[in-house]
Length: 132
Ligand code: ATP
Ligand code: MG
Image (cartoon, rainbow, N blue to C red; front, side):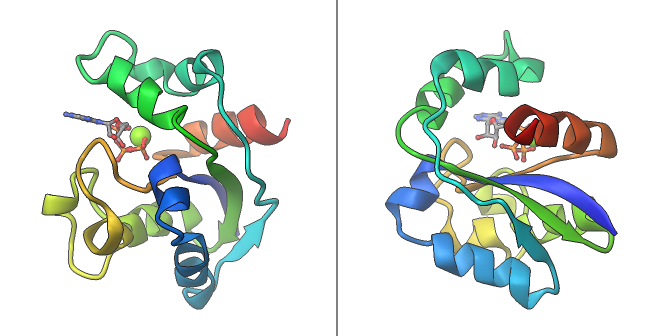
């Protein structure tokens, strides 16, 4: 069993696909833990994505992540970190495999409906970030 951190981003909440996204994870055998809506401040979003500070898309990413409520939660299951990334699909929905969440629901690389931790180290850090 492994835990990973996911966030339904503000565009996913605006599109009213929260239930559909959570169902995909549940249908694939995962447990959803502690989902709760929050509004990230600019400081919090910058800290969460601090690995991308200085990159050309950073400012737009922070504006996007603070544009409305988002829904962080823990996903628990076998090989969760890798399998959740597979279910999400590539960062750019145009490159995401068919039937992945981003291929089905995301509009663009900067509006891509979902986040998932990319390593064991990130999962630990990101779960602590939201849930202490
Ligand atoms: P996330 O961390 O949000 O789950 P990811 O791990 O697939 O996404 P990262 O490389 O961590 O991708 O980038 C974080 C976010 O920054 C992406 O989800 C995307 O919205 C944005 N981003 C990344 N690369 C680019 C890019 N080249 N152009 C525009 N936006 C980008
Ligand atoms: Mg990432």
